[in-house]
Image 1 (cartoon, rainbow, N blue to C red):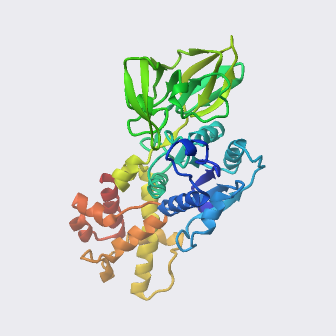
Image 2: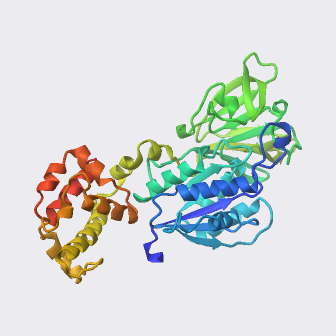
Image 3: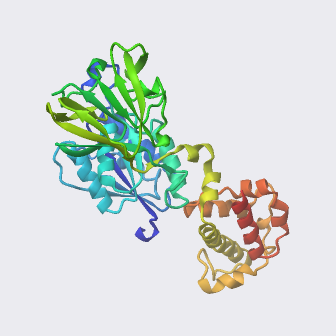
Length: 443
């Protein structure tokens, strides 16, 4: 039901990502439509727990999100809902911007994009303050998350189960803003300065480079950012930048993986910091490639100014994978957890109580007027409250809380805090509730 929706996830994919000319000059494989559909399905299957989540899919010219959803068995994700979001198609890169805006207008709280750095840049352009979950499916993949989409979905589901995305789920890398006679634009990873009139041709030849402006340089990355990654690595979380001056005759030589199966030796004459509030001047004639794609030209005598500034909010799945639910529990508001526990307790204990008493008055849903009475009810009325090897109440309560969007293993919580004996000694439902809350809050 719409009233049960807590977070809306917007899905947008670039049907043309991973198919450019660099496939002819490197060993990169074409990322087919079937590949992208499989990645979307894996993300959707991994999106757990899914209670309270709704999906909004941008209906691109191939409707990749919609087709991925349709080919999932309803039994695999019955708790999720899907809405197709249509928008005017121009059959070009601008469709990504238009589609992102349509998702935002439809109420998307977080945006999941499939593509390369160019696609993610266009999504960031239209996303405003909404968090981004960039999944790599392009040629330049320095910005996107390069792990299996199943894990990305799992991490995002865990993070959203505990409230709005915030630290440690988000970080804010820098971006490169470029202003000149062509207007203003930005890059998420790199701006390369090339010879004039190179517009429209992908960057793969290191002999064309004269300088690089970078927001990151990870040692395990491919592409232009590897020039920094193989010399002086810079993590995106550092929120800083570097200027790298390329000189074929420089004494400092670095072997850089510019693409899959493409390694080149590059001469570096200088690496210097790029800091916020200190713009760099670029003189024409030159072509500027934003995130590997030549787009802007400067004629002889023209100038452009490049400046480092804060970029978009980006989801980081790592904390939600290595520490699992415990990280989420520490970040969950105590009132939110208490509400979920109390609602589940009322339903589970009330039903067991009714069954034990042979009374059908309560059934599966307890009238609100019975809540106060139920909290004072003794819990010794039914043997299923025994906390032996198969604690029925604990297991049913865990499942009920999980269905409400709060993954919680009560057995593990109680055992970790040494509260099993106290729970066995509880005499009323209220005492039972308070001990369970202690176990969850202290884990």
